[in-house]
Length: 130
Image 1 (cartoon, rainbow, N blue to C red):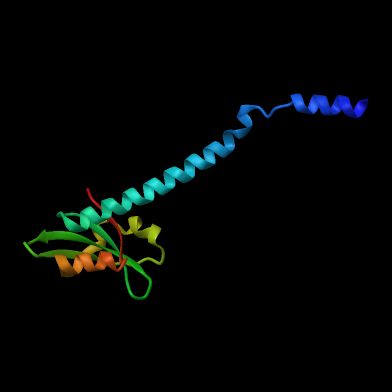
Image 2: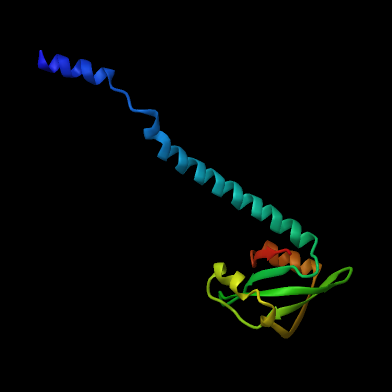
């Protein structure tokens, strides 16, 4: 009799809808993260194909360090830039390098084809467009 009463009461119990709210938030966050990742990749590809003066490119070098260069001039088939004087060990630190005083005398140039190859080789980690 007691067992039947408990079984009957358990059948009437339902989880409140708010108990699923955490799972919903986690799923929403993951979905937003995936969308943001692909959106930034598309943006980077567009920026590589159409560089502008003052674009700042984050680059990973052969030793695993990250640095930036800022585009100063663009011709029909080349870009001319100033390389940052400093390098960092982690990609998320690149934005800390992007200060005017860090760009001094290190002048570099790339053909637009070389720039696209850097992107295809995953050496361009980010592009900051102002």
